[in-house]
Every structure is written in C-alpha cells, then in structure tokens.
Length: 303
Image (cartoon, rainbow, N blue to C red; front, side, top):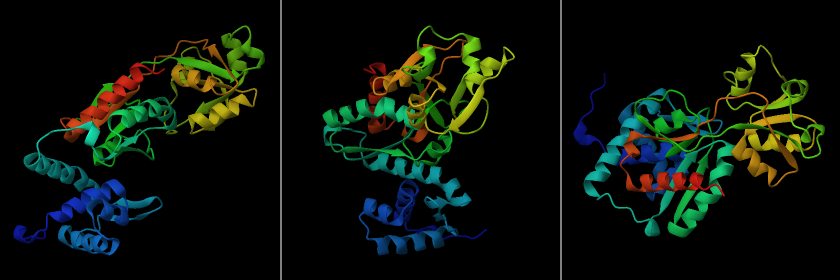
C-alpha cells in the first residue's frame, strides 16, 4: 500500500472532493468554493494524485464516482462536518441562511410538497434555495453518498447510518376520465379487472401493492401501459378509456386540475407510508433539522 506523508496533505482538497460529490461538475464545485474552472481542475488533479485514484470520471449525466470515490464520499463528508462543528457553533437563523438544500424525490411527491415547502422558504428563509435531484431508484444510495440532504419515498430496510421519519399514510384509489362509463355507479372487482390499466413503474423491480393484493384472490389485471412518471399517466388517463390506480392524495390533487373522476378501489390494499430519510451526519445539524420540520408541517396541512 502506498504510504503518504500526512504533513504534505492539503486538506482543502477534501473540501473540493465534497463539492464535487454534490455538484458532479468541476465548474460548479469551483464556484461553490470560490475557485475558477482552471483552478478547480488543477486542484482535482492534485486530489487524484494525493488519493491515488481518479475519484470522478465522466458519465452520461456528468461526473460519476469511481468505486473508491463512492467509498470516500461518506467518510470525507463526516470528517468535514466534524471540522465545521469544531470551529462553528451550531446556530441556524432561517432569515439569514444561504445555500442550497437538495432533496431526491419522484415527481408525485415533489408535486405534493414543493408548493408548500417553497412558500415556507420564501416566508422564513428567502435566501435558501431548493434543488430536486434526479431520482435514482429508491434514492437510498444518494443519501448514503451525501449527494442529497434528504430523500422522500417509500423505503424498505435501510442501512443503520440512515434515519427515517414517516410523513403520512395514504390509501389507493382508482382514476378514470370524468365522462368514463365507470364514473357513475362505482366499480365492482369484475368490472375493474375487465378494464385496460395504466401502471406506474418507478424502479421496474418487484410487484406493485395492487398486483400483490389481486394475487391473493388468484386474479390479475391487464396492464396495457407502463410508465415511470406519475404525472404523465394522469394526462394519459384523462384522454383514454384506461384506468389508473394512484395514491389518494395525489389523485385528489390531479383531479383539481384535470377532468378526472375518482372511484373506490374494489380490493383492499395495504396503506402507503411515505417517509423522509437522511444520513446520521446531518441528524444534529440545525439547518437540516429546520428543513425536516418544514416538511413535516407541510404534509400535515396539504391544503
């Protein structure tokens, strides 16, 4: 193993690495640290030499971490957080706070929380900005790496380094166009199964809660179309004879803006329990705790 003289290490390069993990861009990381693009590129070269790895390489969506880069992302972030805690008291004033909060969430959860959250930012923390990251599966990996501050979603087992707080529970409802033949008189299970269905498949892995519930009865539905975006399927069902099964909060919000009718699902399905998750390194951070509380209050009064 290559031995490194610790006295020769420039710890400022670790700040660059943290910025690169968050921004996935040399230019944007440099701006975060007050460096020009050439200076940031030279610093990245020194960082690679210091750690003996390329750390980040070009990918389809920007810079991507190498395996060693992924392994270092969490420890470096914790190290720098500890250093900040030593030199800076843990005080957070929303009115004067600056910077950016990054949240990973799929489109339906973004629709449900963004308006309320941004209204609170505007009222209490006007210089704080919000960024919704490109989702990756269930987003757990993004939280572990420190790429995002928070993730919203439905999560199964989590690594021990992550915290979870439930936001609300929700049921499933059926959605059809407003003048659909089924809009009057409700749905029997037989009628539900006879329709052509649109299904949302975010990860493409595993069986949906609806299909799992139907399988206990020994029946299946005909899924004519699978789409990875909740908001796109709402537009599709409004212009077709197909049926869609959605979380009720989302369905009610969409029905306020589109010609849709909501119907009871003719089969019991386990309730949904969206949650937010965050890494233990942010658990005691006052700014992070403030944002988490805003999210809790937003979903408590969805409007």
